[in-house]
Image: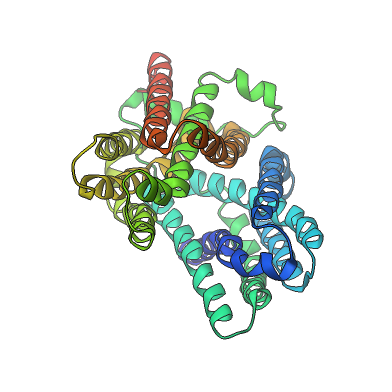
Length: 408
């Protein structure tokens, strides 16, 4: 049963990544057929992001009432329906309407799945599962590109992915009994480092879930604001890195656009490969060490981009290193949440963490674009370094708070 449910969860993580790159890969064709400005993709993206933020805030209540398995299945069904709606939409306004259930489904499944894995599986599975998210995110542009290349149109690309999501939804509903049988089990974690920490984690994870927490109650939990800021800073840094890498290489380092796009994509390759490799050492190192290691590697990569070398090779290598350093941070922060704040609070915390991540990834890259337009694209590594330092400082502050309360 354990292996079967794990396979279902891996499949669910692929479904989580599948829709993420569809809009970007299909929009160059979509906007001309819809007869709207190219910039209107940002409107759809903002609606989707708003939906994910809202559903993340309410994920604690939903999961407590219906369970992680049902929330995941219904959320994937919601995104499948929204993607089908995209495939039959013939106007920009219909796409905006379909973007609402799209975002609501994505945010709920993200928070529910991450909390379930953090509670019931070890750190290595969290790394590998997020690697599988990357598989889904990488597969959707190929599906869209195949449909466009065969002359089937962007709508067929959305239709194809929606059919895949429907199949996954059916599997998720069939697997609901497996989720219930796993509720009271947990694969042994690796974070505690001493007897006091082991006892604290035991007390936390055995605590009975109480009522859903309000946002104000969450902020009052000791150390909670710091992990939220850490997640915000990380997501802002990761998304800003990926979105503006090509522009920096072309406008500041004067690289050919084709070559810049190729090397910018290596950033995401570094994340995917890094998460796969981290899975082999995650249980031995522990979440705290993974976050510190990732932060150090990211800092080294940013310095390679920041320092004005006479050749572009260090900057290109720096982007790959940043991606590799990003790999363990997101999964480790999620997986450490029950350990830091207790099982009874983890769903609430992870839901707000997801919301903070979406705020960072939604608003910070456009804000940097505004700064770059007014001041210069040379700010790119400086802004990344600011987010990196903020992430490290708040993460270490959280560790000191937990150390003071006897976590280690």
